[in-house]
Image (cartoon, helix red, strand yellow):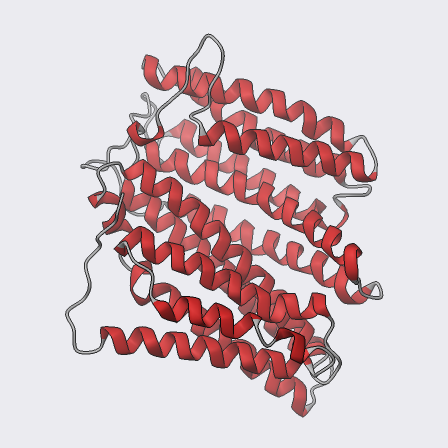
Length: 403
């Protein structure tokens, strides 16, 4: 364990490539947190009588807001351990603080817009403020110190909105929390600008590309693991029937297909693409947005698993179809952009797959959810087969990022 200043990690060499055990422990918390996200969405759609129309949209928007907050904590921590030595004592304090905060946020998620709002907001603010605050204290290089100071000021300002929103009811809470997240995203996008302190150029940030790429691969696996967990829990909650067995089998097949489509081949060589880029941080930031889209698609697909396994022969509603068919389409959209980031192109199979998932949706309303789930699995199978045929008999494709 090191206690000297945590020198920035350069992609050109030095520093650990692999995630530390503490970082993997941190990821385990997100298995729990993502299950709470899914439970909240499932409760809105089924357990409380279901939601339709505008109510379903607003309920889904609230759940997405909570997921984006969880993502912000994870991403901020991942970028920090990819820029600085993760074995340093103070970096471990940052990760442990984020771990505890994420756990508290996960516990508060089901009732975050009622009586657990302050718990959720306080945990989020602690995670976001403590990270730059600790680095301001331990960094002595002026270029890094000023960046963390700007981040600290930004998170303190938005923290007021988070805490104030937690004390307000209903729509006011949603507005303040959404505003805070938007301000944080824009600040990060434009280099954390601050009057009198300037702003940063993201392309010049020092990151350890291999480490950051591995962290994004790991959070995708966490999301994929959550789909397996939810499918298993849903299958064991109720007495089995032939329809439930079929739905469970389709869910497992879909999880395998999501994994296959991700790793073939861009998911395997993301680290190579980042390190080869002229500006690794630019690719890293783009990959962050892409993996967010894919994780949202995978998490929502897991919610679709629950709906299909518990109601295989029921009648589809539009919100149900949005989970069963729409979210795999979201995953494919993110995967198409991911392919562009790594290879500078997009395979037609991605776009055809999205169309094949979305266009039949009006015809599937009022049919059994199992029918829609089987269609989704068949479309993903076709995309995976197209990927395999393109690579068959050819040498492994190398990264050719356009950045």
